[in-house]
Image (cartoon, rainbow, N blue to C red; front, side, top):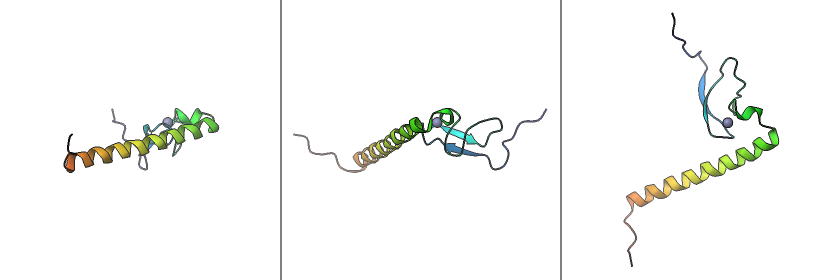
Length: 80
Ligand SMILES: [Zn+2]
């Protein structure tokens, strides 16, 4: 019995539309370089919206991350 080892060139990718992490390429899987198997079947127009929402989400996450980091490092604002 052999353990299946991911073939070379297989990489963990992040779906542009839903942000899911997926391996690509996987045999028998329809996922593309930028979209996971779930989103690849979504109509292009709808996927575009998903991508837009996902990029906003990523932006927001980054903003929150930056703010919480700033809150930790800087002195807290004086309370009234
Ligand atoms: Zn996806």
